[in-house]
Length: 190
Picture 1: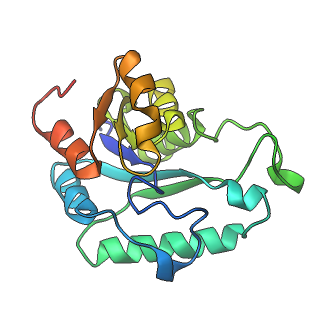
Picture 2: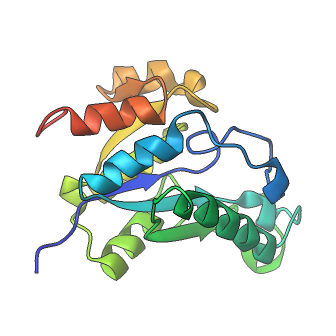
Picture 3: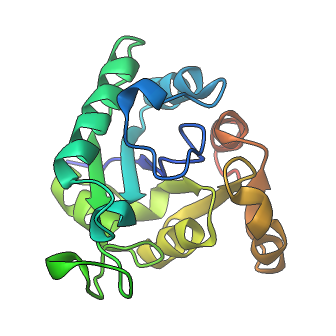
């Protein structure tokens, strides 16, 4: 069987409007056009995988259970629009600001590729034919370290990293729908 293509998606600032340490489902708000863009990727045969750093867990701001509750809400909202998320991967750690078991150096915190590598193994993903979309330099680093092509969006914190990504030859677009246009417009969008 042939490995599958995937688009790895950062959550805050990429899928949903950035709200500092978002945890309440009632405060979740999609960036305009995101559900429709994700449906286009799905219809083109890509798996959709959310990979998110959630240092609020390490910092004691909220529990991993609350993060999972928010992700169930996200998955349900997308399911209502015919979009299936193949996996949600969370890094609850922080190397300097954390409590107990969550205060650690790990391989899953983006810019390291651990969450993408785990998803690739569990979901049979061909990383060389996959993409990472995010609004931070760490997203770009994680995608490239995993062997994906990475795209920075200007939403969320993205504007802060435009120059850095451009100087490395990276791709920068307005938002997730524009990233989907780049991915789908040609056989090799880069």
